[in-house]
Image (cartoon, rainbow, N blue to C red):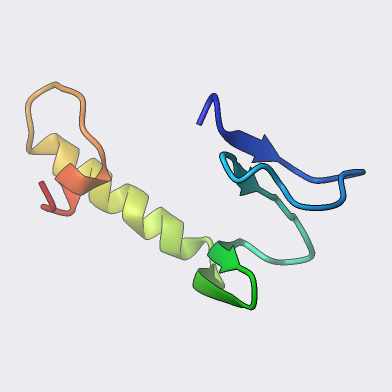
Length: 86
């Protein structure tokens, strides 16, 4: 991402360099977690979205990870380890 990420488009018009990946961030109202991956080309787009209506969703994941960590030796882990995906 260091070489291809483009954050925001303020003041920029026209097409983005095709060798880059665009990122945009919006914070608004009472939205606690809304994420969309958008893949677009001329005439069509595919969107994958996740919308959380409560921070409890994230807290539950943090508690689950803490319980999992108590049962494992010291090391470097990620959520794939916690969820058994590795």
